[in-house]
Length: 317
Image (cartoon, rainbow, N blue to C red; front, side, top):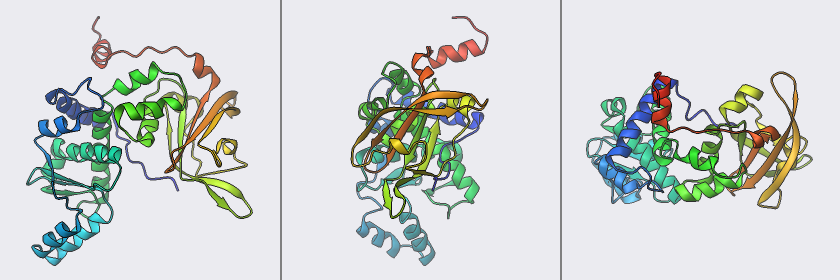
């Protein structure tokens, strides 16, 4: 089953979130330091990670002992669904240290986003990442805003996109950049597609399973197309990749990677294009990168964000 949208914002919302993240990176003097120095970010935000996390069983019991039954119920409900909590009153964030380091890094930036975004801080004294503390539509918006704050800080604006543009156009690139930014391969692959000036799409699949009578298949977790891919081919909507699906031959069965393979894809005008697909099994997910062959010969120029904004306003370099 495809996961609900966790990142889409309208342009004005996205600009506001990125501006807050940009200012925090400025205060932390974090630009150009890779991976993003999380401790410097937290210090600039005047936030601390709780030495004894709220996820620790002893801490949960102590908290429940001092709170009402309703508060205890909410805390237990929240902790069954989340990995991070922002405590605005004490300027402390709680992170589940049982998850991977890359996940912890993203969570710290996500919770910092709740702290740095004025609307979030206004609404919450103790922010819990679940819909029980807010109306569902507001909670969903706050989560998408905090995710984009974390993305911008983790990948330092367009730094990731510029580095990706200097690398070969292949699935190994987001894998290598994940190490550079200390991000998960999952997050890196999504960033690779969503910021790519070329037409490409990344499918994030659940682990491959074998179904009697049907063979290997994998459910689609997310589909991340580049803006150019959407304009040319539309946004894919598959929910299941089976062996007889056009992407079926790319499934890395009993292997880590699938070498680049050619396959056809029809665009929105009904024209056929030769595309290249390749896949990588992260163990947690299967990633498929798909792009038209013409994208390999495309020439792109990435301008610094300040120059790009200047040109939009009609200025001259």
